[in-house]
Image (tube, rainbow, N blue to C red; front, side):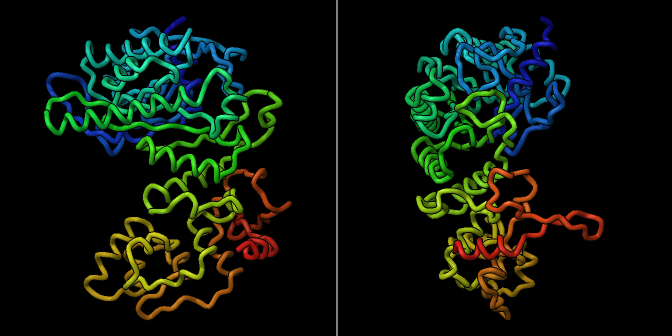
Length: 440
């Protein structure tokens, strides 16, 4: 099979893995090697099927010996199979780099023969790139659960970031849908990467030329919608992973039905894209807005409100904390006001040292007053005396109507499309708003 034929198959097989972001690491180019890495981002490129991606995102092989029910590459599925040799993939990466198509490599693989053999082949690719070709660009590699710890240590010295996919949010679902994988096999390398990274960082503080171990950290991915766990369960797990394993990111991938199985959603089920979107919003609140998972959801309200983003949903459930005075409240409270982001909160904190702020100042700072006006007090302004229904109606998230999410709808026909100015504008039924307000 020709290399480009393999690329077509293996780039397509890699499209279900979403853990592909900016590098998070700076490494300048020099005369000893090829390429460089910039922390803020990587140039975009196109994979074989036309998708715009940041890296050459490809599998080493899709010839898997595992039978994960949700996976398109499972051993029992009838799909075209291909496997790169380490030399082929290394040369392909360097060829694409020299043509200015890519700035780095995102390498994963199905489990060929066994985890150790697969990791050995991936390491050979990275050794060719770093050693023979002196490639200094960004490399993100997936660690195969169950591989020998020595192999994990070796690949961590070659890659900038490692990912160990947790796949499913509970051990029960993992045992049911991915019988070849275990919770321990996934969490053990996570703990190893964290320990080794901390040790390498301490050595680097003492010896400036000490080798770096995954300088861009580690991440993981969960499939959303293939198993019955609630949003609360997923969010609590996410928070635990950040705290225990110091992950850089937890990625969420809406399950796309690719296999007919009684344990999985039907093939005609729409992917839960809005649910994925809400999880990313909540993840942002955990990482940057000083929220805890138990504040965003709880056991009584264990799933996200489809019509309100998590921050607005928290605010309308805690109206007793508002309004807050923009000129005097704490930075932590500023972060909790709908319409105020991290940059806006920092700008407010600096600007109010020089005088009291009014609505015009907030608008120039970048506050989204359409949402914030119901929760703040500032010079010359007090919040409108709006009832809960009016507040909820004003905070309805337009994104709730752009994901095709019938499976998350709380009503038979929650949206009416009417034409205004030549465009279809979603309107919320009055009973939907009243229901949301009563839930508060």
